[in-house]
Amino acid sequence: MTSSVELTLLIVYALSFYLFIIHRSLQIARDHYAKLYGLRSGWIFHRFNDVSDAQWRNFRGNLMILTLVFGIFTLVATSCRKYGLKAKGMSVVWLMVSLVYLTYLHGACVLYILSIASANFLLVKICGRTKFVFLLWIFNLTFLICNRVYEGYPFSLFGQNWAYLDNYRGTFRWHICFNFVILRMISFGYDYHWANYSNRFDKEKHIQRCNNCSAGRTCYQLLQERSLENGKFSFTIYLCYLIYAPLYIAGPIVSFNAFASQLDTPQKTHSLKKVVWYGLRWVFSLMLMESMTHFFYYNAFAISGTWKYLSPLDIFIIGYGVLNFMWLKFFLLWRYFRFWSLINGIEAPENMPRCINNCYNLESFWRNWHASFNKWLVRYMYIPLGGTQTKLLNVWIIFTFVAVWHDLEWKLLSWAWLTCIFFIPEMIVKSTTNTLKVESSVGKFLYRELSAVAGAVTITCLMVANLVGFVIGSSGINWLLSKFLQKEGLPTLGGMFITFYVGTKLMFHISDAKKKHIHSR
Image 1 (cartoon, rainbow, N blue to C red):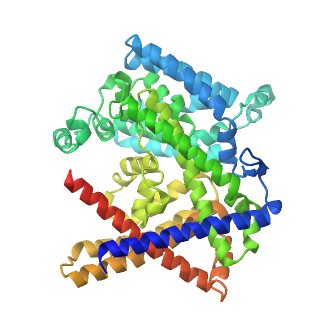
Image 2: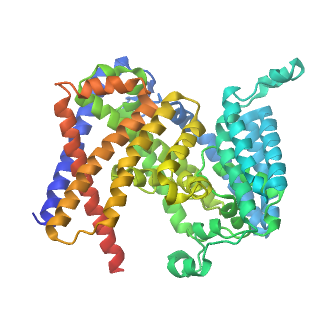
Image 3: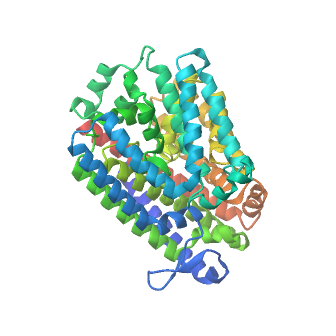
């Protein structure tokens, strides 16, 4: 079969699959909407809107006031830049505006944030340039866990004289946002630690290879890897970095080096035209989300538990829909805050550079899901732990940390350890194939087919791990297996594998087309 014929058949199958999914999703929603939780009156054709996800409901409900803060912050920042303010000046301006924003969000709990941040700064200055830099990890992990255990520390813990402050805790739980602050505190500490050490980063070689840097537009990697002068590690810039309003609530995560470097000179990688187009694409994606939540109700099925009583085919459709809903939700959250940051001249890494439906192995999925967090993990955990030399051990440490960072729940630890188990065979296969070179056309054909089968298995594993971690919990594994490993569920399971196999082959063609486009330039 020629490549063009295969591609045509794959596209026909994919279109048929999505048409069926849309048709069946509409039927399920129509038949069961009365049993679902979290539906509210919507604005599209008088249909109900699925706002069962608390994170999406809060973001959507506060979008107007967020955009108002966005406008004020941008107006202040733009005006100050016109007066030629550099690093220290801009950090003071952004710090003051961000503190007002934080006071609205957290009320009196801003005291906790400032106290812990100040203690971390002192610790960095005392041991950041010594062999005791590991104390930063102990300090931050301790607060990561204690913040959750004590639910953000009621002021009444410190005596009745302080109890009245519990009436002024703001509109948003501070210890949830503080997870991101902890990542920034560790970033500041280690960037300070590495500032006076010999940098292995070859700046000249990078500029020659990087299209942006060779054209005079400094890329994010260069901003992150090059060391800063001591003056940039001041308390004002540090505090501004921790609570910088556009990236405070949800990221994306930017390293201290990259942030402080852009205080003097705003980012030049993205032109104003590109940034505006980025914002328009976000509006289009928001309309896509509104259409999904008004017509399909995937998350409401999962929250209500109603999907447990459906057929295996419908369970697959709901599970697949929930994961796509989660992807689009985070896509919108992260891109909104990144857009806000770009408008103000600070570039942060893109968190969703690739669609969830265009990942067929675990490594590429995690590299393209929470991509800025992945960059942070590589820089501050993976490489210091030994990198590729201890990769099999590293994934267990890193994913356990990621689970604890998200929340103290067994289902998240189950998700982390399931992901590690699924990672091991993939790493072994990759290591083996890198040592073997397939030269014959038959060998290449077999290798491609086996890779497609492996991709189908990996996508199934990813679905299971993420449903366990974020939807059904570890106790739901037995229910999931019982549904698909019985006589009624086996045809659906077979259809899933065929669909994921076809999807993986289609991704191969997309990857080939991209490579051809790059080589032709």
